[in-house]
Length: 116
Image (cartoon, rainbow, N blue to C red; front, side, top):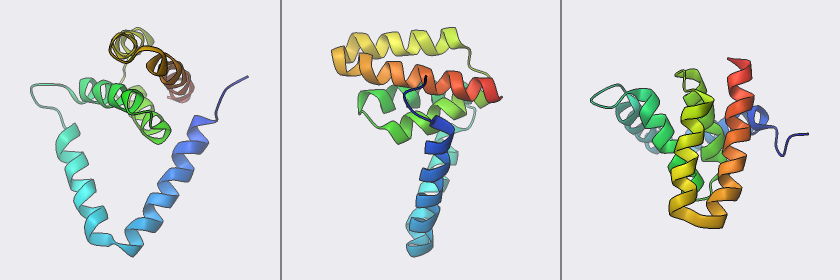
């Protein structure tokens, strides 16, 4: 049994964010541009950046961030072992709360990786 339906979470949040974007398109467009610029390949790969974003999502305890960045990490070809090492650093830096959210992030990654 899964804790959460992560694909459904990502889909529902995407719809909410689209609704926000209709109400405030300039802000939504700016965020989208920032996101694309931050995640593109550079010295760090897009995959590595998504693993970092997943770690930050765990650290700030954002389930929506976990859903989006676990999905992106899976789509960029991250392995389960890479996600586990990323989450290990989260646990080291964030203690118990990171253990809880890191476990959720691993479940989310597993779900999206299975769909890829």
